[in-house]
Image (cartoon, rainbow, N blue to C red; front, side, top):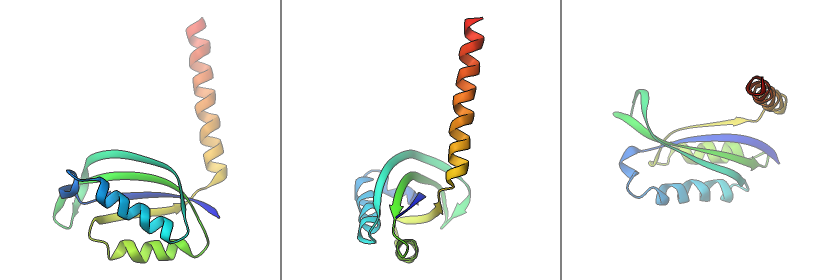
Length: 117
């Protein structure tokens, strides 16, 4: 299984009952053989441009592990799902992730050292 990052933009009219479309997204991932390792709801945000005549969307981020054939299945399903107005599914770059974590650790170490002075 390979690691992926999935960001889903959910239709803003579904904000009142957000659990229903999220359950559908989770079901699509698990039906394709995937496993969700992290889920983060970023909330309702303004879009840079209108999508399906909408100015806002609810952003939800997932870290998922997927088998080789799952990304195509998930993409095909999201393309015909009305609740999802856009999605972005990308594979995780391990080198980039490690470099980012090291940069954060170095930044926090630098700020700790400055506070001690």
